[in-house]
Image (cartoon, rainbow, N blue to C red):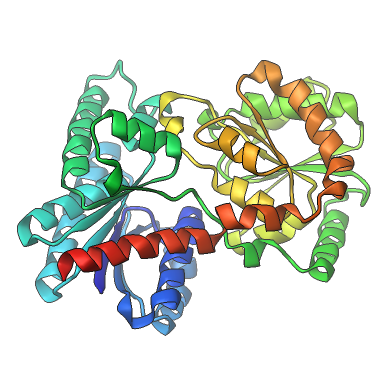
Length: 413
């Protein structure tokens, strides 16, 4: 199968490194020459300059063709219109050159391009919609309802969403809750596949000697005592990720134990978060904020004891799946997480996930989490990484994608 894979997210972005490349490389390895992807992505200049050449060489060794485009962000709205035009032009050019079996689009911008070329060529396309993108942008404040332009953009993309849901041969969502929502909208369940954000457990679950070494080395470098209890937050930290919940978690933990530390792995500025923690009595000496590469995250998770995953529980989050949840569990870390999407359902399957619905529940949840981390985890018959791998491991995700491609193959003859 020759497949045109379309993504507006960059392969050199952290998201591309964790949620695009592992799937495409994994499918190529699993299916071999039966799966030949051509990728069009949009890359940030500074990231592409640092990683582009090495990534291109890597993809070439895997038999994957890559056609990176320049991502534009200024002026804000016009840049997106221009990128969408470039996206359509490049996709049309490839379709004229190659007879693709199918098109695979990640999220809405790419999905609209795939829908259009599918209408022209008659080839099926996969709408890997992930979350409810237009609703996410409204919920996160990027498209405020009070602004006429963004209100119109929201209406435009919601209309396009309906069109794409009707025309796609296959639809991928991240949660069972999202699938239920789509079914309530009238989308047939036979076209919907749930694939939660997965992790490469082989990368995040370090062998014991490597884990101990990383734990000792990083804690020494960060001046964290070896016996201290380290909470870690990995990933983006904007207002919609509920930093106020992070503050509640860490202050609740500090009230219970004075030997807790907070390690924040993010490229974003966290000065306001640190100031708030300090004002609530959390010692600045027990707080560390770092920007690390995706490849180094497993080493830092090895230095931690507990994972933190927070977000504001808006409507769009019914369709969201924490990437960091799978990564924490792969590193054998119990997790406190906002009860979005399927988190509560996963907690019923996997011990070590401690969901909370409302911030008022955080102190009691933290107490349970600390009890588990300090005692209950030791009595598990198998590690958290082993328990969670069949559900959130990369292999499970690849199996589901393979099933989608097998249905596409049958459809195209």
